[in-house]
Image (tube, rainbow, N blue to C red):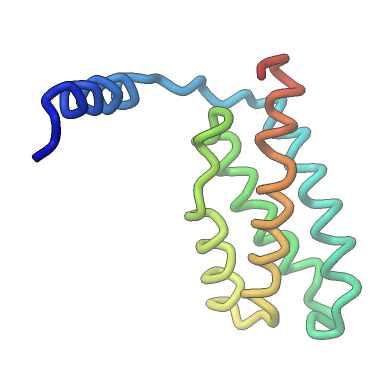
Length: 126
């Protein structure tokens, strides 16, 4: 049996988490971060033979999806979702372009390493 104090405490934490409101997306941050993302993705994917003449189109697809996410949903640490990266892989594959999973993998690794950190620098938060 769980002690009553632990149960009450966890309910309070869950309630506080559910009531927390993340900041709204910042359009200027989204623009700057999208440009960094695009540059990195183009650089990395251009080095892979599997893309041949399709690298620009693959990068365009991934960048559009990432930009849309940053402009509409990303509100700081805790809001970086996996959904845009799944959408990237599915859209690239659905268009018959090569390297869908590789492009999504490069994209998600970059985002994990940079987006939250860049947000904190942009907003001056810890």
